[in-house]
Image 1 (tube, rainbow, N blue to C red):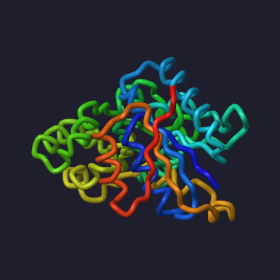
Image 2: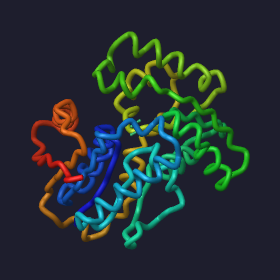
Image 3: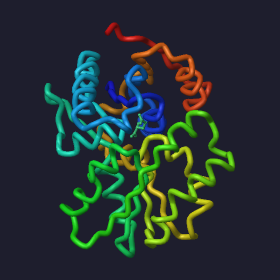
Length: 257
Ligand code: DGL
């Protein structure tokens, strides 16, 4: 089976890593739209256009299912469960929201996300359709993506910024926090160090991987990984090797667009 997924850049590799763990035999086609990142500050209309184009590209690569591995892009496709040609389509929002709802005891759920995701109000809207009385405390965290990309995850600057971003969530007593952006699971350890004991951090990449049903066809394939990038980005390739581990046999390609 061939699994297609896309993100604005490297962040979606956190999703890919979880999927490879779960489906080591599957073949993967990853599209990183490095020419047009970041997605996290784009308007919904722009995200819709980029998402449609990316899905179309993946369909042209004969994939069997498509995953929108970017939260900001997922906000415009929460209710879309199929691609135009009828392939199953997965997004990053529903799996982590469902898991958060199962984990919260006080029904106060914190969400850390990009500006695009926070402003879409997608999480409060989604929770509202599932269960009344859930209080969502959202925090946009625009500085975190650059900090992760500059590999400053252990830096005191990052700790200071995280403290600032977490303050409203913790003072509102969120007992569950969704790490609602591809890059944030990489900051799980410093985030956990700031939160009171017992706060549950939801990793959307794990949550997504757990929602893909295990069917026989996912155990077939040769474990091939093709990574398409819309910009020749040496930085991306370096980080991809770092995130995927040296053993990964990724082939890097550049679509002709
Ligand atoms: N992948 C994006 C997301 O999950 C973060 C990076 C960006 O802004 O492009 O929202």
